[in-house]
Image (cartoon, rainbow, N blue to C red; front, side, top):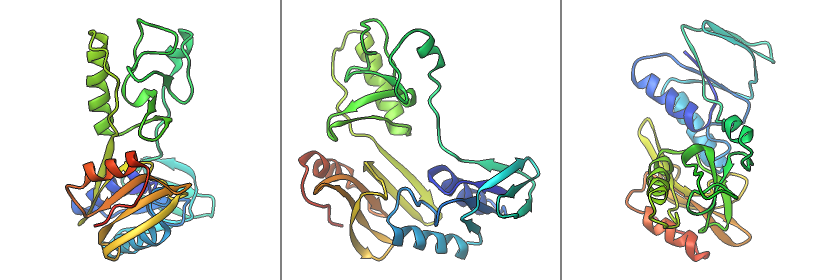
Length: 242
């Protein structure tokens, strides 16, 4: 199989396929796996690790043509495959909301209760909603499972009259062969990374910092620290230790 994309979905899918006996080639335009999430050194280490596991990793490749039987890239590479799958991210489907005159900005804009801006009787939840995240002081559209579950529950309760703001700081997680991680907040390789490794690129914590404030935490093969990570982000100071 050919997997297009080296981000959250592509990396998880490639590992799962190899674990099930499939030969996999990964194609993506960035320099390494998880390039947009992980610090440079960690991304390079994960890329090498995938190659050790038998994945044919091809960074720097932009796909120009794809079908169910193969792909072509702008560099001239042609690959045949039994199947091709692309993990390229999500675009919020807001067509219905726009037609209804609701405010849209990379998602349906809602308040801390899930209520659509300017309407008392319309709510939106989950991947399609852009909502305030008090712990970070910004608005985000969040695409992961923990948020879909917790935001849907909270907004559903508010539709029934609970009138409680959504203050949860969601996390996401993945397993990449024998490596596993949990992440919370803004996990973005463009931010400054404070790396605290017990074993380099195998077990440790990365705190993402912006203007001196912790904005996100990556727990790399470190478990039961999510609440601690959230507290560091909410406090707005310090970095999490292993």
